[in-house]
Image (cartoon, rainbow, N blue to C red; front, top):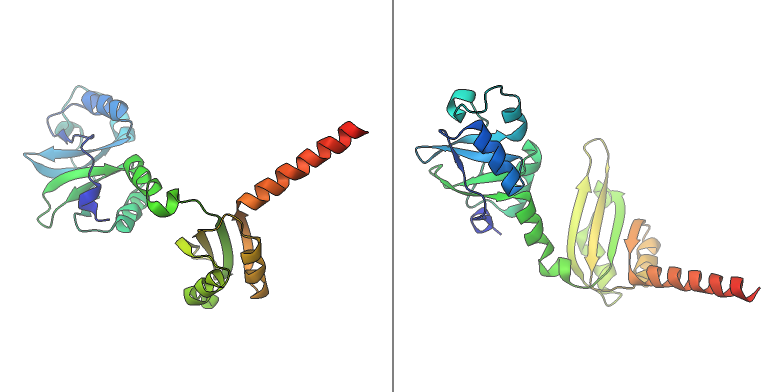
Length: 220
């Protein structure tokens, strides 16, 4: 998904003539803590709720309250991963989207992005989740896919998390199987570390264990 397709029509931009009070009211109405600001149709920057609250006279227009505003934005052709990265970098609740000439096209919000991601097929499709830990140098998606497919399963999506102060990575796999025990045993035979698994079988086994324990207690 490109940034252009992520634009939400729900959030209007402020203008440089709007007051600090209007900015706070709109943030409250649209459930965001940031808003884009335009001047004569041109993108000026992004204003935050915290910055507005630090001002004394909220009846003044924004261009009097702020001499300079930060200008975080993404280009219309940027991938959704780049959009998420920029939002995380600047700790934003929304981010403006500009074209190649830096003309304002619209914005997208964290809530809108999370809704889009949650509605993707790989997220909504039934399956189990497996979290592996390994050294960066040992990472091989071809081997991991081979292990999964050898158990008559397939990978629906994957996600890597890493820390700059660690030589290890965490790989999260969404699989199309809801019972992962056999797949887990195969990974363990290949010396993979299983950090976590979320599957139907564990839940059912735990429920059965609780039921059996209750029955045994009642039979005493």
